[in-house]
Image 1 (tube, rainbow, N blue to C red):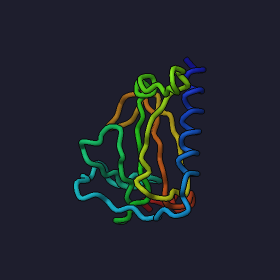
Image 2 (cartoon, helix red, strand yellow):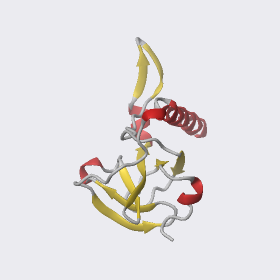
Image 3 (cartoon, helix red, strand yellow):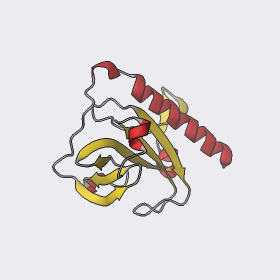
Image 4 (tube, rainbow, N blue to C red):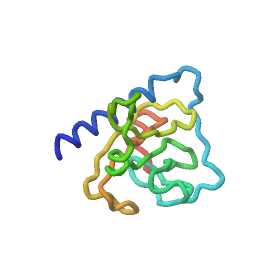
Length: 144
């Protein structure tokens, strides 16, 4: 089981790196909060308020907002989603695949967290993927 989680984590990291590398030079850095987004939480230190369209939950995107500005997005990936989404090339099964739209933004950095016990609002074991538009220093000062 630990080996599977390690392989899964490595695959997710590779996908995230590819998301960042592909075409970021011409992509705008600003995201706006969609009109159908609803506030899910007050400001969480180092993340911001959480906003989302309820139809997009629990996967996301969840918009991370500080002082009215979108500072990033979050996706929550459950282990069973990875197990059920097998990537194939022709007849060959090559790995597991999860698509996380970047919403046409350029991200400063991406953070991957594994939460074996989940958290409030999503109590199942899952991975949180945070894609931040701000620097790590700015991210550490959100909600202050």
